[in-house]
Length: 254
Image (tube, rainbow, N blue to C red; front, side, top):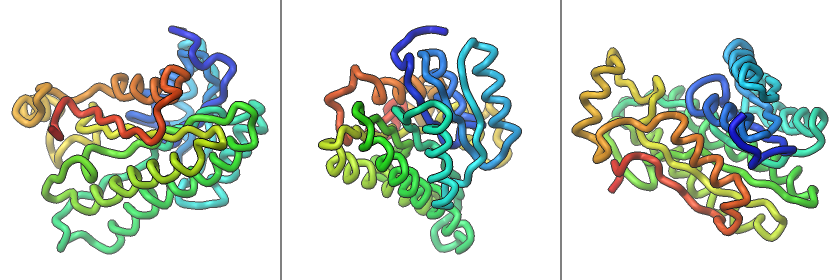
């Protein structure tokens, strides 16, 4: 364990079986949170829970599809039933589909919308409904992207549109519910150390060479770096941050 910023608090992380979601879950647990990790596949969630337990933390896994309202409502209910409240929620679940706009299939378009936009919308609804009933309210962090609101890249137009929608949902919901004690912000990662940032057939070593030219920082962000930004926004230290969109991309969108 590395700290106690979230001691006694319950956190929910969607898309927590791999990548940024797993890193966020581990970081929250290391700071004392009881973490509910959610995703569509049981096996990677169980791996995340095992990693949390090995580090001395507390986590439970819940299988859920964020594109299904009933699943999301059940997920929030499970967190409250198990731990008594929902203090922090990180809406990280997302998918990437890359293609020129005219060539993107309708199935890929609907998949992007269902998970990246509707999934965040449904999660926000369920989380806000719970948090606004709690004396201490709660904090929500949505995972958007530097693509969309901050930057455009060929062959990512549809994905970027969904992430711009997440940024807009964040700002609007933040304004509507801060008076109820629910504080909502977003992080917008650029290329990070996940499979999503690899081009088809590209190795991590090849990506590292490419990023030396594409990022002012000269590298991808680690998932731990993104996680620490999420934890800051969810923490009491960020109590005056409402509707913030924190870009974590090594200067790529500048």
